[in-house]
Image (tube, rainbow, N blue to C red):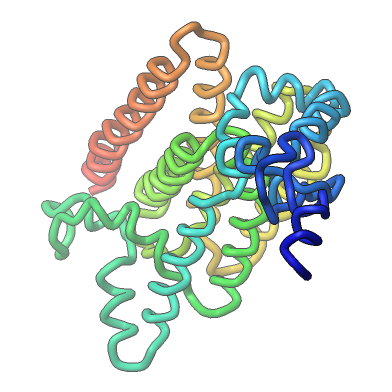
Length: 296
């Protein structure tokens, strides 16, 4: 193509700014758009007209989500669940390393959680409370890892763009913490690994926030109930962590919903979540020693 042919072809220039050369196409109408006219979409970019049409076609639930949860993060980064990607990547790497012969058992034993690691005076192991979260990084085999990472991807690709990266990561970690607290309360003598508690918290948050937005939550509820019953019936599954993660996820998501109605939403959700974490730590610090003392 000669220079004159290139300049004569309007497809080589932004349709809204004919003087600006560009080779980027709107993913919906396939017209050429310059950087100023590009808005990130879940896949590629779209032009301003397609963005307006997309907003006009939103359901009432989507409009409420945009108003209450701040859809700016979706348009700014294309709604890509970056935190979900990182969680899956880091967890998968650590879990696979923990499955290798030789170093694998050392890694797993260094990261797993059991109630004894919270109470040095009542056990023969050192005080290592950080295991309440490091246990999320290791899994008991390929199937355990694969199912949990698949569930994390399913929940994360919907939930993270809706509530934002900071809230999503907070929800994940506090739910995981809740799962470990439940293990320490209900089964202090059992050790556990895996991110199941955190993932149960994510699915419960989908229920709570979806119900708040008026979305159809029947499918999520059915999946959650089936998985919880499965954990109760199958030996070796830490249903206590599932229960604790679900309760913590419900509390954190309710904090998000409550804060979304306030003028200073960021201040409120951080404060409420901090209070939830404090309550979890106080409970796990006070209740199990009392129970063990009473039983001796």
